[in-house]
Length: 286
Length: 278
Image 1: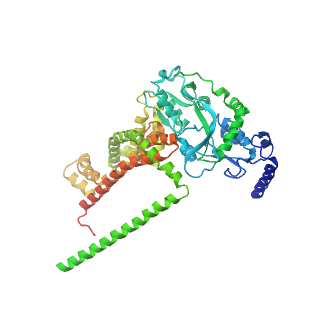
Image 2 (image 1 turned 30 degrees about the vertical axis):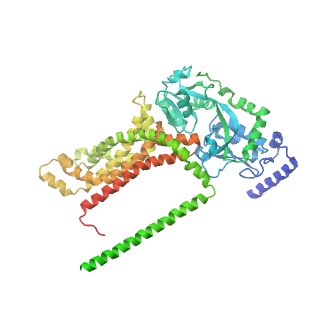
Image 3 (image 1 turned 90 degrees about the horizontal axis):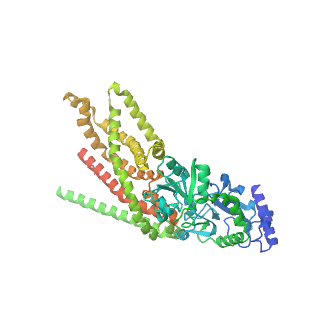
C-alpha cells in the first residue's frame, strides 16, 4: 500500500516537473505549493530521486534546531534547510531528516544524507575528506561562564590569560583558545555540554568557549547562573557550511540556491527570526 | 642405538622444515590476498585517505607523543596505590578472625560493586562528583579524582588476583608456619604472600596492560591525553588517521608488556614443572 502511494507521488511529481519547465530553481513559492521533487540541477544527484535527505545532530540543539524537531522548521538551521530545499525545488513533504554524529558525517563510506548541517565550520583541512557549500552563517567565538567566574568582566584578551578554559571536542573552539587566547593554563576538553557544565560547577574550569548563538543557548537553557561574558568579533569568524560527501555534484546546485536566498534577503530574514537576540554580547578586544 | 637416534633426529628435522614451509606459504597467500584485494574495493582510496594518510600521521604523531606523557604519568602514579589497596582488600578478605567479619563484608561489597560498574561511570562520578562538593583548586583537579577512580576500580580487580594467589598457597604452608611459632600476621607476611605474589605476576601484568588503555578514559573529564588529542586532530582535519597514530603509540607499549608477560608465564611454568612433553 505504502509502495503504491509512494509511486503515485513520484508519478505526480514527474508530471509536475515536466510541466513546470526549467526555471523552477528560484521559484520557491511554486515549490511550497505543490509536491515538487527537485529542479533540473538536482535531477539524478540526490540520494533518493525526488527526495532531499538532510542530516542534523543527534540530538540537535537550539537555537539551531528548536526542541530537537527539525521537521517543525523551527530553529535557524531547520529553517535554512527548508529554504534551501525550497530553492532547489523540493516541497516540504519531499524533505527527509536523518541524524548523524560528527564522526558519522566524516567517515569515508557512503553517506546516508544529501547534506548535513550542524554548525560545521568550513576549513581547508576538512575539505580534503568532505565537501562544503558556501557559508550560510558567519559567527564569532564567545565565552560562557558563571557570574563569579575569573573571566567575568574581561575587556581584552590579555585579561583572559589566567583563566582556565574548557572547550567541546570536535569544535574549532579549542584551536581558538590555543592560538588566539593562549592562556597560561592548559584548556580542558569535553565531549558535550553536559561535561563542560559539570566541570564549570565543580570549578575545574572558569569558562567555556563556543560559537556565539550556542553560547546564548547554553547560558539561557543549559547552565543555571551562567552568562555570555563576551565575544571575539575581531579575531574569530567561523563560517558554517552545509557538509556533503566529497565531490558531491549537488554542491553546485546548493550553492546556487544559497546565492538566491542571500540575494533575495531570505537568509537575512531567517537570521533575524532565529538569531537576532543571540548575537548581542560584549566585545572582547584583541 | 646411536644410528636410530640420528635417524629420528633427521626425521624430526625434515618434519620441522616441512611445517615451516607450509606456514610460510599460507602466510604469503593470506598477505597477498589482503594486499591485492583490499585496494581493489570500490572506495579504498577514500578509506586510505581517511585512515592511512601519511601527511596527517606525520603531523599528528609528535603531538600525540607529547600528550602520551600524561597517560604515562597517570599510569605510574596510580600503580603503587592500586597495589597497596588491592593487597589490603585481599588480605582482609582472607582474614579468618570472627571479629573482622564487618571488614570482610565491606571488602566483599567493595570488590563486587567496583567491578560490576563500568569504569566510565566511576570516572564521571568521582571526577566530577567529588570536586563538585565544593573543593577549591588545585584539590578539585580532574587528574587527581580521575586517578582516584582508576585506582579504586583497578584495586578491586587486582585484589581478586591477589586473593586467588593467596588461596593457591597450600594450607600445609600455614600449618607449618604456625607450628614454628609465627603469628597469623607473620604467616601471611613471611610465608603466604611471598609465594602468592610470585604466582600471580602474569595475571597482574594483564591488568596493567588494560589499565594502560583505560587511563585514556580520564580524558572524559577534561585532561587532554593521547586519545583526546587524537580526537581533537580528527575533528580538525575530518580525518581518522590520528587514531591510527595513537594506536601505534599504544602498541609500542603494550606489545613489549604482553611479550614480557608471556615470557614470565613461560619461566614460571618451567620453574614449577620439572619435565616438558614435546
